[in-house]
Length: 385
Image (cartoon, rainbow, N blue to C red; front, side):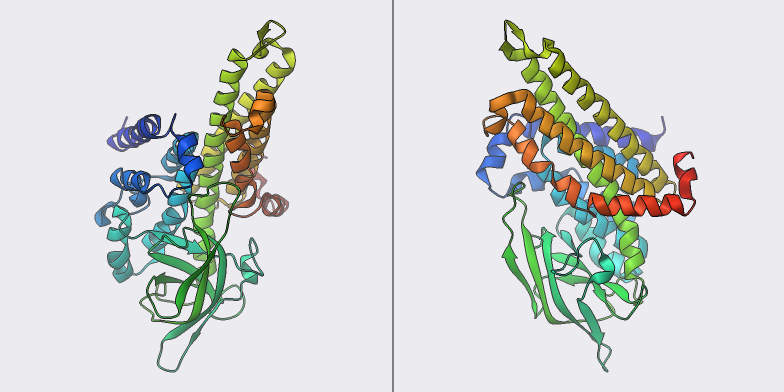
């Protein structure tokens, strides 16, 4: 095993031990308190996870995509809220590391690696979600060379708690009419609006962001050239979808473990319910599909790590893992029976968290469209056809 592979294994094992020590057995109390888990975010920073995508020369871990997927799975096995604090930050740092100017890398990445500067991603708008080309937020350049950003973004994960946000905005027309700006908090005209009340992940702030003629310069334009924002964001979204699939696998694993434990302990008609064929059928499906989802996520991660086009296989991973997660969570409730409907047992939490992975990073309906179009275009060799 190479030194790099050993470091990857040590990181994954460290995350696993952290989850065992700080999350398992405590997550029900953490979740029900609806209190912002500052101590856990500090622990993520201490492990260096906010620097997962940051190159080593800027103080980061620079881990590969397959290892990142494994880290996200292990965190989600404990509590998927933890993943919400990392995924958009990872995407933002990967964009800056790959496309940012040297000055932008030096300005942002060291602070991001330490978790001192946490960054959100702002895509969704009232009139556009999965369809990025429908966004209306616009940055207009004035005669003095300054940009003026105007528009609203909604449902922005970590929108209130982050110190900066990567904003996808129009700067022209057509596919080359989009750009990314790094917008730090505190600038005149930049404000945080209302916070959404979600069915799960109540500890994660999901907010509106308002840009009222925020003045920016080319120093905040990622890459320093307008017009490349859509492609830059789509590149990062591929990894984001793989990470979302890995998170769904972690939740499915946790729901499966809970169902197995309950099936071994709960008795009906003189025997554990796990001895009943109907329950065994559910458990067999849950275990098989969870393992298959993990394999597909890792396949997508390997494709992305090799530098190939990964939109189709990343969409497949996110689609399949998200649907498996939703099915496994529901079956966990079924196996728990009435106990699955009360918050004393974790099954109820799994059931509330699972729909998130069907909806975010591009809904699963959008993933089906992407996958079908790529297959029809002759890209079937990517899946062995």
